[in-house]
Amino acid sequence: MKKFEEIYDFIDRAEKSRKYPPNTAQGLRAALRLFEAEINEEERGSLEKFTENLDQIYQMVYSKNKTFSAGSLATYKSRILKVLSDYEKYGGDPVKMNSWSPKVINRAPKTAKEKNSTKKTLDDKDSLDLPESALVNMNRVELTLRPNTKAIILVPSDLSKEECQKIKNLLDSLTQ
Image 1 (cartoon, rainbow, N blue to C red):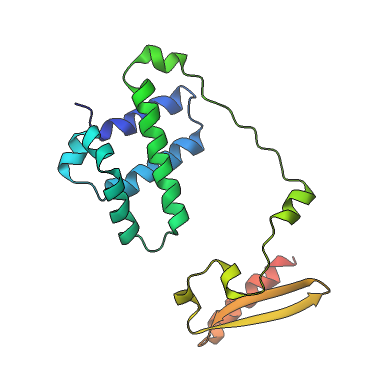
Image 2: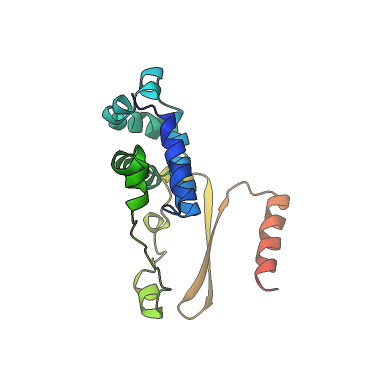
């Protein structure tokens, strides 16, 4: 019977044999750790049971990790699905592992046109990608710096002098 813990070993082997780049392996391990916190002994002892209950486990992870966005948790779930798929194809057989040729993705820097087309406007609260609860007791400060360029700062309504100094220091560091 395949156990949940074997996935960690598979990731280590795949990283050592250069099937996963180090950052990919780290991301897969992080996803596993997040989901592992919510699995029971039966799921820990049986990879089939874990896979079968993945949607329910995801719901538990989602409900207990409010600091993560829904998109981030969906990314973690897709990483789990990827490593499970790879493990199923290549995990148990060293010959299959050796014949595995993962797709290499070369990313090029975005052109100026691509950067401009994906810029978000900050004209309203919705475009800040913050939950409404995060905007309670916050002051929004907008400052026009030059034509078509402005700075927007969200600060707590009860901003202290020390907190203000931290923000000032941060802004000062941007021009050095």
